Image 1 (tube, rainbow, N blue to C red):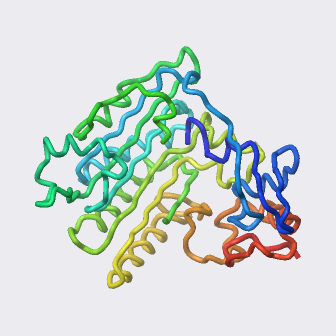
Image 2 (cartoon, rainbow, N blue to C red; image 1 turned 180 degrees about the vertical axis):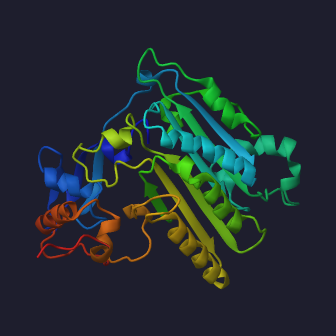
Image 3 (cartoon, one colour; image 1 turned 90 degrees about the horizontal axis):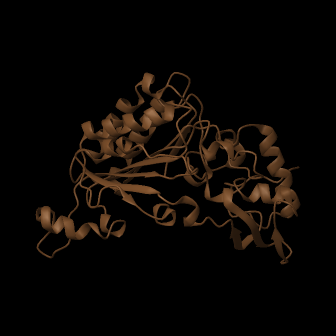
Length: 346
């Protein structure tokens, strides 16, 4: 996200079927309000999207790009060390956009080979104990790190020491690899604009929270945690704010997804864990964000968007602008699948 921003930032043209059954091509120039509303505004109720055209980026423009994909057996000390590196990036508004870092934490039995098929050979050689009698791997709890560097100028130089901190104690197949850029970019979600995560002790707090739900084996809970730096003066996530899209919270510094999937009988404890995260992480004196910031694709809580709009949009003026765009695009409310959509203006 630091290097290139959001996928929607690169959309040039949208092809839709409108509420009268007409096929339309929407661009920032031909219909700026509808273009704005579709890209980040209201989930799925402005028309039927059939095709879209995106800006093409060429590998030849980013020669020398490097990436590291590292796997760790889960350990809270290791997780805390990795999160400290993420916090260092997030709290530094001048951190260069060349670097991107994403940390994921996965419960045991996650089908890791679906994401990382080339891992199978190395694991069979060095960790045969994780394979059952049928040859199917029984994965323990793991941490997965994706780190990458992209040159944007001929004078950009990669700091290999930055990669070295993620190679320590990892199970990495090929180390840091030079690859085409196109090969490197292949719940419950919170955002923050905090630049004091280190001072506030967020890394320790979130490590303890993750450990509480992932530590017991065979506990009927499956954690999905993903943490990624998005902010800073040079981040394209930030600087693309006025590009004609309506994605919210562009001044954020870090995005954090903490989801706990569970068996039915374990529902009460899972929901209790999520509630503790909400109360301790979000609020004026809390560890992660002083403001409740959510994204439409990671929504939770109330699914009546008319009631919870302030968690998804910066201000009422933006929500009202989206209401007007919806009224123009769908005056009869044909595209209203559920209450989680921008309400028609009255």
